[in-house]
Image (cartoon, rainbow over all chains, first blue to last red; front, side, top):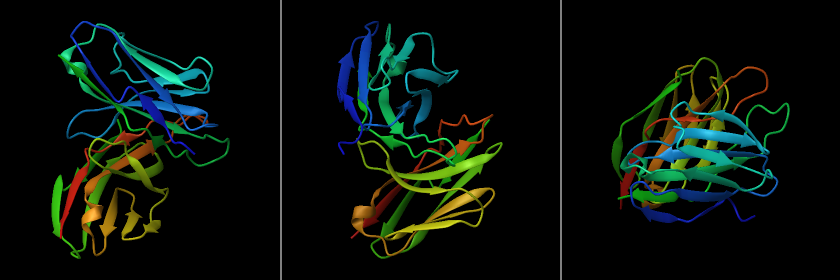
Amino acid sequence: DTGVSQNPRHKITKRGQNVTFRCDPISEHNRLYWYRQTLGQGPEFLTYFQNEAQLEKSRLLSDRFSAERPKGSFSTLEIQRTEQGDSAMYLCASSLAIPGQRTDTQYFGPGTRLTVL
Amino acid sequence: EDQVTQSPEALRLQEGESSSLNCSYTVSGLRGLFWYRQDPGKGPEFLFTLYSAGEEKEKERLKATLTKKESFLHITAPKPEDSATYLCAVQALAGGTSYGKLTFGQGTILTVHP
């Protein structure tokens, strides 16, 4: 079991550039979540997928953010025209959602730290 | 809107000095309350899920409890390796079988001195 992996681990970019992050979930997990965490705060929900379907997006997610999970396995999160306020840790989590279960346990990856200069 | 507030923001303990962390929550309907541990520069690590008032879960020196409005994480005889940020999160009941996002508190930074 390799856990959730994220790449790159660190990204430094200039304001206005586009960036893309990748998340590989735990194999056989059908749900994949993206969160953003700034210093001193808890993670903040961005969006999540069940298989390849994007089921919910936070209203905080501006149209500069887009996420995909084309084959229901790995996912990418793209930020266009980055702004300094986008600097944060971007966390990915995966879970196995089974019909009838009370809830799913989300397992987090190590995160991608984005710095926008 | 779901809200989670954790207190204190930071807690310093001596090794062996037991204490508790608090998580107060407001949610339309609780599907589950989660505790995670986060080390600096890493992603959160799952600890416990609690579902209903009165429930308790234990793991080593940690014990989590749940009431209708708050949860406590009790740390018994902590060691320096217990130093971390402890995060509380709620998952709300949603329409049909849809559930998903976690709403997190800001965390409690625990430091245990030898």
